[in-house]
Length: 161
Image (cartoon, rainbow, N blue to C red; front, top):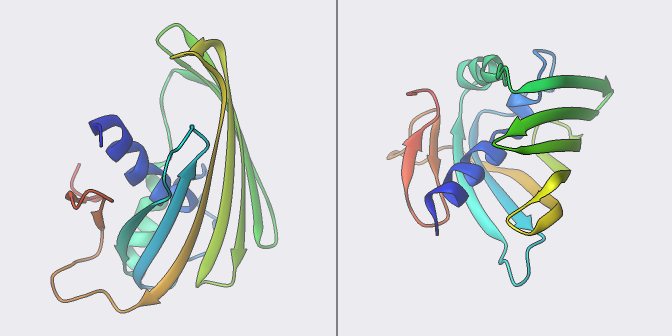
């Protein structure tokens, strides 16, 4: 797996906490498994593990994008559904993203992110990422809040930037 895919996996694993608002639904403390699928041809579904406590979940909400490269960042919440839209520049490409996260209480959520690239990035004009996350229990003894284990086994802590 390329480094950019690992970074994307870690960032997407934390999508609900970084969807540009501090009033996101809280996630239950413990171990979360986040299954992510990118619509690329033959891309397998990948599972990332994330250990949370209440303080880490709340702190991650403060990691919202602040890039000057993003001219539009909007978020709306209607009960357990959070919709966000953004327009950002990356290199010479403008990325317009629309994301919908649907929470099932504090133990599961589903996210679909659709992004258009103008001009196309690496030959792609659009991409869709879906993820399903579920709380699976207490964090194991070898994980601490903020730890993320990427699909390739790489471990990092989201709070140690």
